[in-house]
Image 1 (cartoon, rainbow, N blue to C red):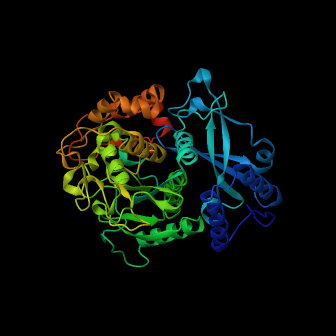
Image 2: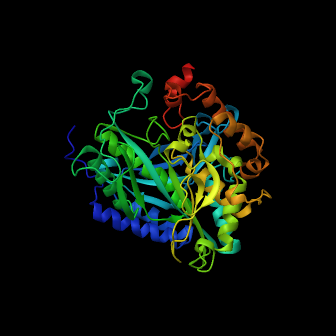
Image 3: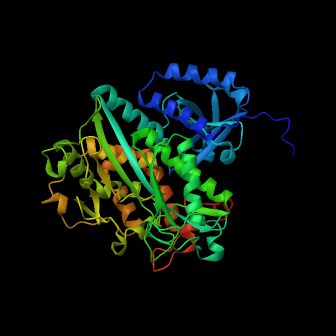
Length: 476
């Protein structure tokens, strides 16, 4: 079809980066929401080349959903957007299906036209219950509420940066076809830090990094990881909700770029047995008035007393929140000590088998790194449970808590049992959402072999929450 008559918005990568960094700065500086809303609506009204606004939200398991609204319709009806919540896993029952989508105008992104199509912009949405309050199963909204409350009451800013590993496999839809092929094919076998310029993995990494820069990610470094065809593209830290949004965008961009190249970007924690799995090391800190509260030049490992208290609470609640950080059957393959698995409920500055590591830092970068997080987990759930545990949790009376011989579960059934019996998990999510989440995880587990064994079984990929085919679920 001819495009000669179309004038949809197409911006250069430099123009995109400038716009996205400006929006990011507004968000960082907490510019009043009504001012941002007014600015965005004026922009959408004046910019005639935009045809649609893509509103993004995540379900209870962290699967990203997208709705395209015609721009002219959205400008008139942005405060009355409804959708059927009963069709979203973990959301409402059929008898009470209507939910609303609020627009988080600060979380606005301009995306490259060659990757997302011309004439579109992206914005994250808040899921609103019928009574006008944040919907309890929209963990993004719960995290946002929690972070805003801490900022207004104590002046705290919650910061996070995530190191997200993935695999690049041959062919499109390699995960959905796994039950037919029973294998994943690498595009590259070079290994850690090694990939020749121009080979498929390097081209994928370069292209994805360019898209990230254009979307204001402020990249730091990118490279092939330890396992064959594995990658990691690092970017700067941000306020907690923005950081979680970037995780969702990161995975979306990777998948989109891979698909356009005829490949599959996979964030399964352990898609191939015998090589290192995918992790999502989660670096967190708390600041106040620009000061990093985790830094103490005289503290043990330069970590402040507040920081060590945060660590102790996370270690105390490690088994309570394990299912939130490792949310799939496949995730428990990764917690294997033979492959640098962080399955020990310990804290260390050097031992990479410890669940929590204290990286080398300075007054600006001092942080706590939670290493036992899988990249397929709901990022909002991950960051909410870590910060909630670290700031509001209790401290166990276990002797030598930071080095005690304790381990995370090696299978989802044990993690489920711990989670269902946890009072702390109930305090984090509430009984209703906790039960919904556990039921979803139980359903996925029951579709798979109870024993993991030595090779990845088709159902743990086929019925994975981030991969599943609606048609296959309906047949089960």
